[in-house]
Structure formats: C-alpha cells, structure tokens
Image (cartoon, rainbow, N blue to C red; front, side, top):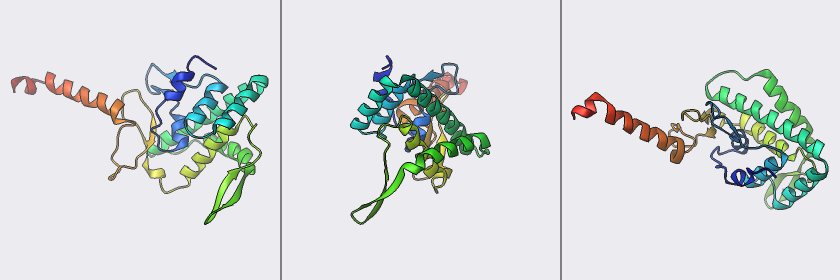
Amino acid sequence: MSKGTHEVKELKLVGGVVCLDFANTVNHRRGEEYEEVLHNYDDLVVWSEHAGLLTKRQTETLLLRASWKSAEAERAYARAIELREGLYRTFSALSRGHPVDPDDLARLNAVLSAALGHLGLEPQEGGFVWEWHGVDEVLDLPAWIVARSAAELLSSNRLPYVRECAGDNCGWLFLDVSRNHSRRWCDMADCGNRAKVRRHYVRKRSPTAAKG
C-alpha cells in the first residue's frame, strides 16, 4: 500500500453521496496545490472500505487479487480515476448550470453497461433490494458502485442541490440538504471557518473598522 494509506482512511466524507465523495478524493482541485489522494489501486480499495462501499471481506479479497494481478489492478485503477474525473466535471458543470460533456456521460454509461449486469433484486422483509452478484473478485467493483451512485443521483430530484464548495482552491462537491439550500461550504470546520477568519481579518484592516 502507499504511504498515504493512513490519510486515505481519514479523508473526510462530506459529499453526502458516494459518487460525490469519490470525486472529492483530490484536494485543492482549483489551486496550484492539487493533491491526489488515491495513488494506486490499493488506495482505491482502502478508500472504498472507508467510504462504506466495500465490506472488510471484500476489501481483503480485492487487495489479495490485486497483489497477484498487478497489471489488471493498474488498469482498473486507471479506469476508476478516469471515471472520477468525468464525474467531477459532470457534477461541477451541473452545479453551475452548465451542460454536461457528452464524452463524460458516455464514459459513465460504458461503466454502467459493464456493471448493471451484475445487479439483481433480492427479497427482504417487506420488499426487495438490489444486490451485487459474482463481483467479489472483480477489480472494477469500486468503480461500478460509484457509477451506480452517480446514475441514481443524476436521475433523482436531488440533482439540483449538488453544490461545489466556494472555498478558495477547494472544489469539493456536496449535496446541499440544508433547510433553505443555501450551504456554500463543503465543511464549516474547514473551508467555512477559513472564510469566516478571512472576513474577520478584512474587517479589522478596513479603514472604517480602524476609525471605529
């Protein structure tokens, strides 16, 4: 695993939806300090367990398979990152009222085409649930789960509430479930607090504040 595995396990999950949390596995998207969080396939799997996509058993199975199918794991990682960047562009554009790039939508549909054949309905008390079948050793499983999450969000009435953090250089995405849908920050403890401190600093330095 990469040296950043510990950081992967501690990455905040503020998106409110799996696909947005996955898009947020890059820090400082809009700034010069762009920072990749997922450096390899192992990081992808560890993050997926951290985010609740995979069980501990699934995580162990995929890490073991990746250890003796390293070339396949590298390709699965590359596909997942390609999907992530397309999802970021898609939801970032929609949050600003811009059209979606057809190539990004086609990429998502291609992943869905591979994934959905492994989904089926299973009975549970009072109804039915979707369950994955025959996927425990499929290296693309994390990307498949993310793609399903993205498809559900894109086709839901929650889509208008996707936001991009207003923090300087941040670029993280989140679902605004605040009462009046006016949330601006991915996390008040981070970007929100920095903006508050900056406003306070500007007020103290302004001529009006000095005269007061």
